[in-house]
Image 1 (cartoon, helix red, strand yellow):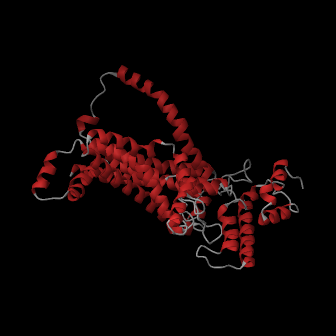
Image 2 (image 1 turned 60 degrees about the vertical axis):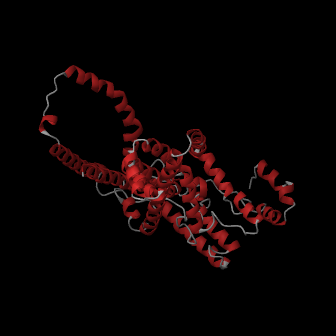
Image 3 (image 1 turned 180 degrees about the vertical axis):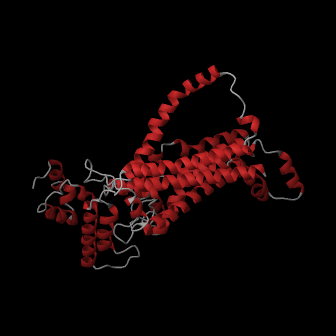
Length: 432
């Protein structure tokens, strides 16, 4: 087959020819054909497929145990055949037209909205919602001024959500880019049946990740804010600038730098450990270490946000609390845990909820680990794959856009319910 000039130049370079292994691989490459540009080809480039098989053959499984190369290659072939069949298996059109589903969902949404309206109306006092509108001119002008914002919100928020939901009810994929059809809730059925095991595992890890990062960032940020608040003002200003740098530096740069620092081979941290006689630590290639490293990096990246907010709130806490605590013999640690942290937590609950949602949908993890290390099971989610990164893989590595859209709808519903319930609980606590 044809070979591109740049590939030929690389094969003939000294870098390849002077290395025995690379030279041998290059010789094999002269007798193979370029991979065809077809939708099924994306399966081969999926790291959860190739990395598992080739990595296990050359280096053993994730626990260092040797594997049978033939068995692993047969497993790869079977998996690829199954995935190709799934990719080419066009789900039949739904028995009912799309308008039937739209009608059912519209009725359900209307019931929810009416119920919410009646609930809110019941809570409001009569004078508030029965108050007549005296100045209709001002009201009309107000609505006219809102029209540009309503249009922008509709274009950039409402339409994408509705379009995504529409795609989730179709068989839109790499082989159905134009001739896709409406299939109802078939994609959702796939998620909660054949892919339920992976969904549960990823959901648990995503919840642990988001909760850990949010809580640790808040505690560490508040602690630093407390220390800086009690420090000399000039020194505190210098340290505030230093501590806020992780938040100011662009996310991509920060994560790529940490990826280099934590690299098993050649990473700066492992080089420093080697200098004092410690072997390389698999920060990003061990299942549990990679998860711990991911949480650590995201906390390092997120704590300045809470530090800045907490620093401003600490000024409003009455000094009487601390004076009374000192009189009772409380230590600084006890005052932080019993006074500062609880009061700051109550004030920052809405921001903590938003922070949890942001971490739940944290795509930066993909830049740090690419979802790896890969599972021993071919095609299974990686150790650090969050729901949002798995949606990305499903969409762009296997080209199952309809299924990926269904996953994103599930995530959206979960986060919406979480936000509503959390805010309701917070409001009840405030009333008490």
